Amino acid sequence: MLKDNFMFHIVGAGRGGTSLLAALLDYHSGLEVGFELYSVDYLMGNKLPYQGPELFHKRVEAYLSACKQQANQHPNALWGNKITTEQVFGLEDHNSANPELKIDILNMFFNNYLEDMPIIFVLRDGRTCINSKVQRTGQSLEKA
Image (cartoon, rainbow, N blue to C red; front, side, top):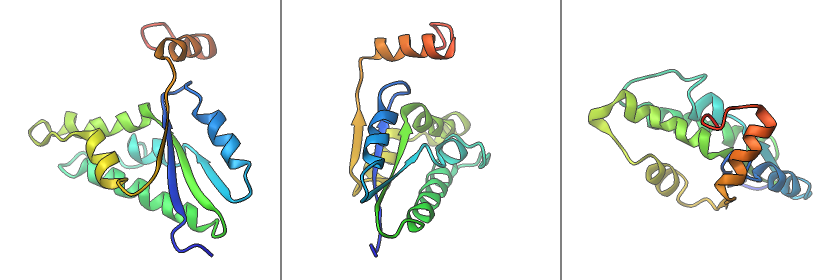
């Protein structure tokens, strides 16, 4: 049994290939990959609507705690979660709600909270991501 098996994140823009990579990794018997687990609930605040000065920290800590609990359900595998940049952007609610307490969301999230965790960042030409969103979801070009 692994002591702490919450080991990695897969991050990228929506429609950027993160789901494909996550599915390929999840197929490996020694890995277990969550597909955007808890990111909408906590990073975007759907289940944590708190709006005070600790908004960022409360959301990130709730997210990481939920991920660790999920990882513990798979004690014999390395566990990781796939999230999108749009979901991470939900943490910007902190700066909107607390203009006097602005923080660098990306720096704090990746370099403080996830500093010891490998991040697999999938980068795809943004033009193809937008085109894919327009075609797949029917969104307008501006919204995509």
